[in-house]
Image (cartoon, rainbow, N blue to C red):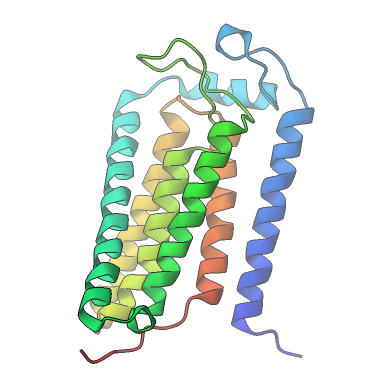
Length: 223
């Protein structure tokens, strides 16, 4: 029996979420040692510290990923504006493009995870950031998650609004490159542990897989 694309996407998202949960359990229970600033206990400490010692601090990539975070927020605002304008023009939320509504739900879930992991501290940063006096929660990397989820949603959404296939391919390529650069930049900038980035990528992939599975293609609505 052939498995549908939707089922495959749901399976991929479920697997990624499962691996994300397993990673959390490993961090909380395996090789926990006080290797962080102010002797904060860090899970999978040997691997995390070895990678952090290898990369050191790279402010160029830190600022690059900060800028990508701002770009991602502006994209969220853009999609929100599209949805509001459609609602005002069409005067019925049922006539707003369902893929735009789905994107709003995706961003809301992403925000919920961000708030959750600000409250539930899994690991702490390898450095104390300027202006702070105490170690901050670092798992998963919020900038990595923000860039991956938002740029991933653009990868899936914008081609539906662009008829020219060549332009659609260019947009997808740009999104993929920027996602890869953000993940790389957050890996090597030194303000996160390796497991922070891995966790963010796994969670982002899970959210995008579910989004892709349940997102309905855009229907052109008159008026």
